[in-house]
Image (cartoon, rainbow, N blue to C red; front, side, top):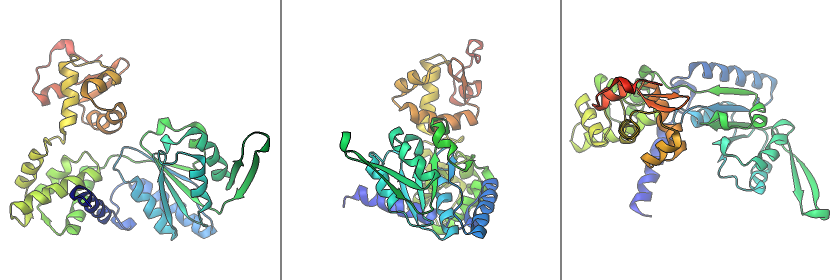
Length: 334
């Protein structure tokens, strides 16, 4: 195994170790947790499986973790797949036919599910039957296989791209919001204990501030700051260690990464602040359109650095100020 693959494997193991193992360890999303608790307890009392569940929201907010916690609450096995991974009808048929009673099927990126495959999923979700067609032409035959009661948990970052028939078959839909800084601080404190390193309160607050309201980002930054601190032969993470480590990672005091700044700089320098269409912006920054829309735009808009208008994306006066550009009246938002 190469060093790169070994490092990735270690990072994945570490990410799993940092993932909350029970509801008390899961910080934030309080309304969702309360609703899930009611849903789960009611299903347990009826000795039934609960309705199919859909989580949507930006990446890194805990959709997969919530699916694991739901499975643990029911004492069920969880099988994980994703929309792009299911390429043929036989793939989905194989997954569904191997489910046991009470199992949970977690379908990530369900907005990328092939529409033909969705047609097989509808009766499986509604009536717990799997309709298969074997053969072609006049010799084709239809088989129907009964499925045991199971729970489908879907996750998506693009709720609007889900087809209406699929969306309507989920009994409950939850939108995950970005976390508050005090919630991210709790997550950092919990992760630091698991990583067996101390972190000062000021360092914790600064790290939470730049973590984009996202636990995954907070844990990623914490791991890199820990590396930096240990190389410096220090036992406690201080605010100066955090600032120095983030500077090496090209993270500024607002939490902007190099790509965030690149998007804003291109918008200001090449498009005179906007408006600019998403396709033009993607081409100019050499980034995928979906990546800009799903990963970078929500955070930039949340900070008030970018606005969407009917004509395209526009850099705000705050973006000019933060990046050191002079803002002129002709740059006013359209």
